[in-house]
Length: 476
Image (cartoon, rainbow, N blue to C red; front, side, top):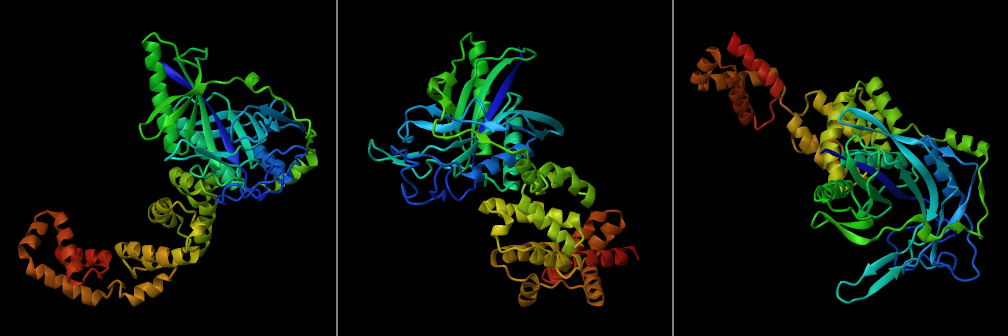
């Protein structure tokens, strides 16, 4: 029997506002515990929340970018549960009347495009954070995160594989970052993902018993957790056992999921409209004003890069996944109209360093001017590709001009045809047996001669010119 997975994702995106959703406390990450708190976010008696308008604006931006329907009236609700990091004993969220419903995000996996539907996008406040003492049976609570604004994005159960889930998450993260409403940092918890997953016989329209997965703070962990859970549920069914509806955590060290608690249903939270907050009424004129400020989004930009710069779809996909990287690419193309060359170096040399450091290109010392100056030296034959890679690393790390580095270290490529011709003749005279092999049809011997010339010139000879000169001498 063949099985298929049915997966829906619940993503929480922490918004890049300076203050919290219902008070003026800072949202800055990494501050001393319990230093960004006040009576409002701590839920002290007699305090009243006041909605941060910027949060609503950010929510509208995402709704527009994902083709969702914005409700003219939405209502905040109290989600009641008791946990040490929830000072009020409830979380202010939205339930029956969210800010937006419907919409979709388009993904592409193995060349196949697919639309993943959205159930809803709603606003809510974050809870605090528990810190467990590793030496004693004690836990501490940091309330700095309490009241930080979140958007919860709930997908339809349209995802069928872990690969589709990761593609969806990456596309959503890219959109959030293009809109500049969330930094998408999964390691710091500003983008968090829970997955609802069940399995069923292929071709069936009936949903299986779903399990919720938590504790996945990277794309890799999402994929591994889903892969494990699919296998676990299929094995239970084949053994004639039942899949239990529950919440499970992903154990990163062992690569397995394990039970956390029985799954709660919506009624367990006893939702009811928050009496301290009036309904949110959104004017259509405001929505249209926000629509005009939206940037060119990843899918549109990718299509344009393929058409305008003649980039392969894969290159365009990678470069447009980050708004800042896409802008860097376009600035480089204005300075040096060689889009494929620029794309190749971004995809290999630049992205390797950015991924290693976990940085955006704007957080480095590399500028489009420095990058294109280096590529110009390469294109002109002033330096070899091997030298260019070494110079790139120094430019990336120091921000120095490539020309200065090349001059200072004597890295200029030898392109004097007369001088190189003499060296080539000398090498051929010193290796008559190899010359005879070449002339008898073993053309790959030319690589040996090029190597000898490069050795003679301490790697400074222009390999392209050397190849041409050697071929001329050998064929002449």
